[in-house]
Image 1 (spheres, rainbow, N blue to C red):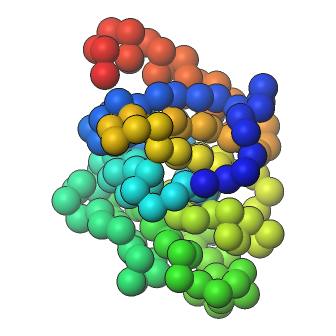
Image 2: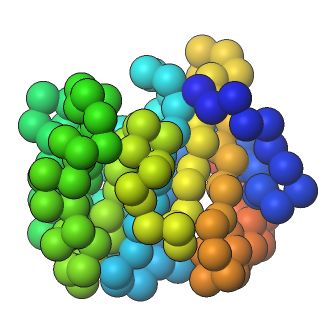
Length: 172
């Protein structure tokens, strides 16, 4: 988990289930256009992979295809919008991340999602949407949208509006 508390520039959503975490990812996918970069931050078990499953579902990827890429550093998921899923947990430094050819993926017409983005933040583009997931209790997660750059501020603002409408109507 990051040591950075939420700020006034952040947007917070509370998820009360794995399916709700997936739904947050799915709704966000509808607001992203390629190429986009989402950095995920949070401890083991905080819901990062569940979030990616939902985001991929929103991009037209079969949800069952999405698994944690811990032992395979990059998973490519073809869909209506391709999703490139990186897990940098086992990398020793940012240089190793760059050696994966991440620059090429960032130029592709897809959505790049980097789990453990805080470990390679020094080499990530400055415009991105960082999402911090934290464990509140066994089923509840706090999801902080931390937009970096004006484009992602607009995306995060729209996401919060959609989420309030969705959660008010469906009580997720």
